[in-house]
Amino acid sequence: MINERTQQLINKGEMLPLMEEFYTIQGEGFHSGKAAYFIRIGGCDVGCHWCDVKESWNANLHPPTPTDAIITNVLKFAKTVVVTGGEPSMWNLEYITNKLQKKNIKTHIETSGAYTLSGIWDWICLSPKKTKLPLKGIYSKANELKIIVVNKNDFKFAEEQALKVTNNCELFLQPEWSKRDAIIPLIVDYVMKNPQWKISLQTHKYLNIP
Image 1 (cartoon, rainbow, N blue to C red):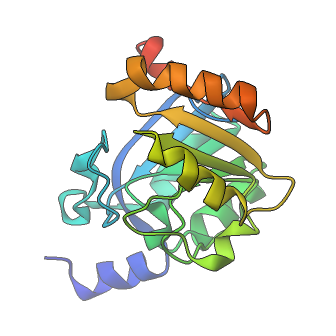
Image 2 (cartoon, one colour):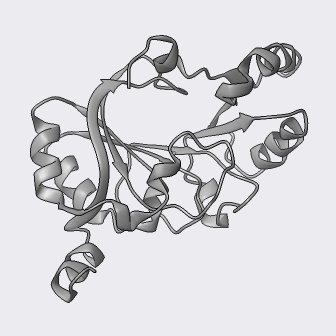
């Protein structure tokens, strides 16, 4: 049970339900191949059946951690931070991004867009999910649109979502990992016919790194 003082700190973003943090190589999307410090925050109610971090869903399983302690760890390693989840936009991210920006750390986020986004971001990767669609305000802010492809119907969903982002937004199709052998040929064919899209692969899994 979280006490009132801890809840106040969470509300201000001075504590976050940290699931894990680690320094690795960004494996997906536009910044694939770059070194980055990942901050995975617990809590998500979007409910993707193929999610590979379902243990992140229940925020109560992940103890509130002082945000300053997280920032101290970042400064030991990285010039770029990726905040992910779970669904990180469920939390107040003003405090952490303000502090990181003052230290000249690039701030990236991976979000479904299901909640109002707080914080200051150098890169916003929007990955919409059919189970809980993004809020309208996030589309104009997205630098990258990443659609996870599980079946052929997801191509139609991808095009519907692409109509809502700006012309400068990078468009990516990514195969769901467990179905990659069947889905990758479909994505290759689709991107060759629709070259405004690019392919994103979970290269960190091929490299066997976090």
